[in-house]
Length: 169
Image (cartoon, rainbow, N blue to C red; front, side, top):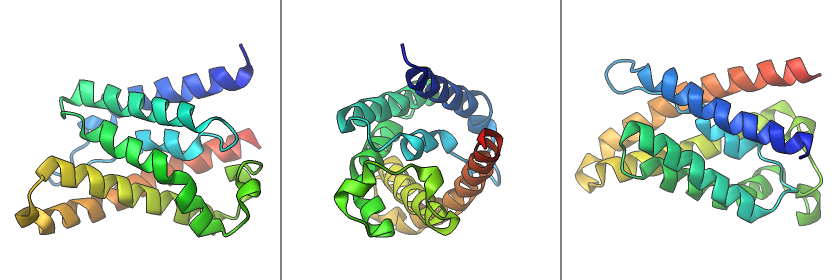
C-alpha cells in the first residue's frame, strides 16, 4: 500500500475520532458546535478519482451520523460539498480545468485557501441545519446557527490546517 493511502486513512480516522470524542462535546451557548471533520473533503487531493472522494465523504458523514444519531444530515451535507467542491475551486481560483488536477492546496495563496474553506464550510452548515430543522419558519434559526457554527468551525479548521502545514514544511 502506498504512503498516500495511509495518510488519507489516518486523516479519515483521526478526524472522525476528534469529532466524536472532542468536538461533539463542545456546545457553546447551547447550540454552537464545531464540525472540523469536513476538512477531510477540503484536503482530499484533486488528482484522485472523484468517485473515491464521494464515497469517502459519504462514509465520513455517515460515521458521524451513526455516533450522533442525527439521521443522515451529516452524510447528505458532506456529500453535497464533496460533489460541488471542484466547482467552487474553479470559482475561487479562476484557472483552467487541467490546472485543478495538478495543483496542491498548499501551493495556493493563504487568502484563497481561507475563502475556499469558508465557502465550503458555510454551504455544509447551511445544508446540515436546513435538513435538521426542515422548516421554512425556522429560517432565522437556521441562518443564525449556520453563521455562528461556520465561524467557529472555520477558526478550528484553519487553526488545525496551519498547524499541520507548518509542521509538514
